[in-house]
Image (cartoon, rainbow, N blue to C red):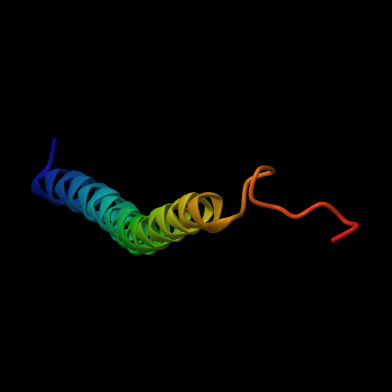
Length: 81
């Protein structure tokens, strides 16, 4: 193998390695963006979850207060009075 052929082979190997690194960097950037988007979505869903739990608690409390404040059948006057 002459020095020119060895140099060409090394150049080809270097080009192949550079290509693979560029491809891996592209996928790393793509995955990083996907993880960032998922993190943002998770944060949003966690906020929505907290708000929904708060609303459910408020509604349950309102129902309990409404049950306590609602007159029972014994407290109501018959319709002819």
